[in-house]
Amino acid sequence: EKSHTGVLKPKTKRSKRFLQNREAKLVENAKTAMILKGGNTSETVTHALKDVYALKKPNAVLYKKKNIMRPFEDPTSLEFFSKKSDCSLFLFGSHNKKRPNNLIFGRMFDSHVLDMFELGVDRFSSLKDIKSTKCAEGTKPMLLFAGELFHTDTEYTRLRSVLTDFFRGPTVSAVRLAGLEHVLHFTAQDGKIYMRSYRVKLKKSGCRTPRVELEEIGPAFDFVLRRTHLASDDLYKTAHRQPRGLKAKKKKNISHDTFGTKYGRLHMQKQNLDKLQTRKMKGLRKRKGGVKSGQTPPKKARTG
Image (cartoon, rainbow, N blue to C red; front, top):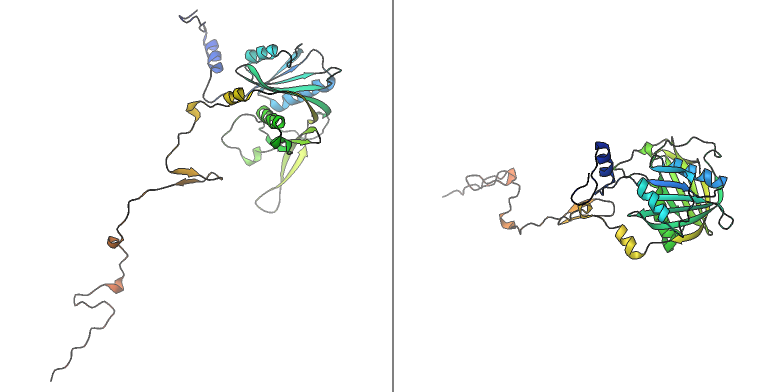
């Protein structure tokens, strides 16, 4: 059934809920990633895609069939899959003689490619290769970035932003201490990017603060940065624009310091200190005869 604007109306309650979930919101849903493999993949790429999918679950969609596409030459196929599955993040794996063991991390804005980074896998250890207790599915990881390049180089700074978007998980208001059990560590050094995954173990320390140990659980990657596709400054600025409803209203005379402590400034009228009521002391009270309490009255002089 078409409305007067020519837009198809949902016929069932299920389709109505589906369309409402796809509508723009002030607070968006958790970002979902689609994970695809190209027409030709190696065993390393296949296992790498499955392990990244395990880290991203449940906010991920894994496509098992091969998809013949070249994201850097023609991103239209990626944009089609993004709109179909309502995913704003993607990981594409491929393998060929020129670029072996290739992974492309990227993100979308308004169903169009915003940023893409092509990373070559030099070394890979899967979840199965590292024998240890794994974290529970859906655990929100802590992200650590080490290396000057992540703060000084434009491409690496944007790559840090993409990796943060990809792995950070849903936004939460509070996290309990026992829930901080997964760490993803990225290091940029000597032209490579090292990705390691650790499980946090809280041990007894003899005091209130526990002793923290890290146990590697996998997967582990050694990446080499290959091709990049960066959004223009104007498009990047538009993608980061916040709706007015999310912007906090500025309150007068209220400020916050670096640690989030709230300070308020009060404006008072000038006080007349002459009429200021001070504390009355018992020893300074005057008696009826005009003598202060605690003092002996003066003796009368004798007359002739």
